[in-house]
Every structure is written in C-alpha cells, then in structure tokens.
Image (cartoon, rainbow, N blue to C red; front, top):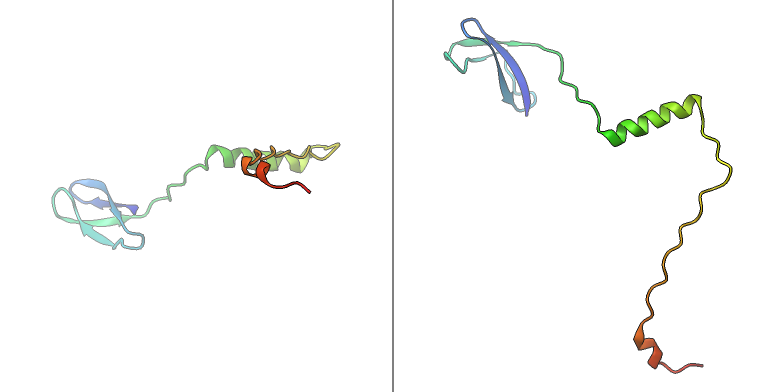
Length: 93
C-alpha cells in the first residue's frame, strides 16, 4: 500500500492508503464527501538498516584507505563429532 495525498477545497489535505498505481486524479474527501484533487509530493525515502550502513561505510573507507592484510585469516576448526558407542562392538582388523 502506498500513501497518496489529496487536497479538498473545503477541508484541506488528507492522506489515502491505496494500492500502488491505484490513485486517481480526483477522489472523495473523507470528511465532507466533496471532490478532492491529488497532490504530488516527494517520495518518502527511508534510511537503510544499521548493518547495511556499516557495510557501505566500510566499502567507502576502503576506497581511499585500503586495509593491509599480512596473512590470511586462520582456518576455523570444526569440533570432532562424538564417538558412536555402536562402533565399539564392531570387530577390529
């Protein structure tokens, strides 16, 4: 749903939530049931979340001040799976 703004000549501006592309040039006023014309406004833009902002900032900083890496990161060791007690009953070669 997108919020569209309309202006009634008697009541003033009001907002309508309609499906995208569902706005008509004129609509009925929600207060007086008169004719209201659509008002074109700037789009409502939101800021990205904190993780994306940090990633974009790090990317921008690395453009001018690249980080120097002296060695690859250490490999992660996976823990050994627990021994299955059923294997103790098998014959050994």
